[in-house]
Image (cartoon, rainbow, N blue to C red):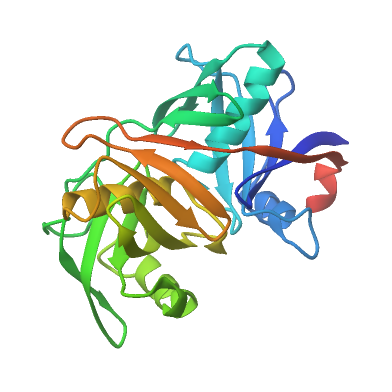
Length: 276
């Protein structure tokens, strides 16, 4: 049997395996089976913590619910950081991810993560062609979506500004944009309503997972895209379905800082061999 933790950040939930001392063999099909909410444990992402080769406190590998491995996850970073801080009795850790190294700090009852600078060039996101990532049109099956922006937070995001988030067709438009040909590595999709220069309402369609209650990198991408349009300042509260995150960005090459809660749900064991 293999031990795991179930954690969540604002309802964005994770099954976390610690492979620092004992290697864990996890296939994409195995990760997808664990994430299944009826036949498995159930989660948005499966996380495997490994030893880092570059001096970070740990390496975090991230599998979406469909089994695809992805580069970064802000909510998972807060959860794993809190676990490592509790374990080491420290108030800061560094996490290595495919999307870059994340510096995490405990501030009272919440966790702050330096997500690094956003990547804004079309090649870095990536897009399939040279477009202005601040404002462009996304061709999808059956039409076009105007008023889109693109941001990479170590993983790709398409930000769509809407008049009212609650009426947005997230489950229809989300998968269409995720798989649009302009995004060669697929994309996460954020639907953003600007409530004020200090507050954004955001719903998220996550690449390889679907609608989630929260997305840390998505909240960062939404705030960056809004700031680039002059729709919000350097600090904004981002209201996701699962609750609020505070996002700060000073513009240009400055780093994005995300702050929010993380919670342990329970500890369990699973027979990974039974997954096939």
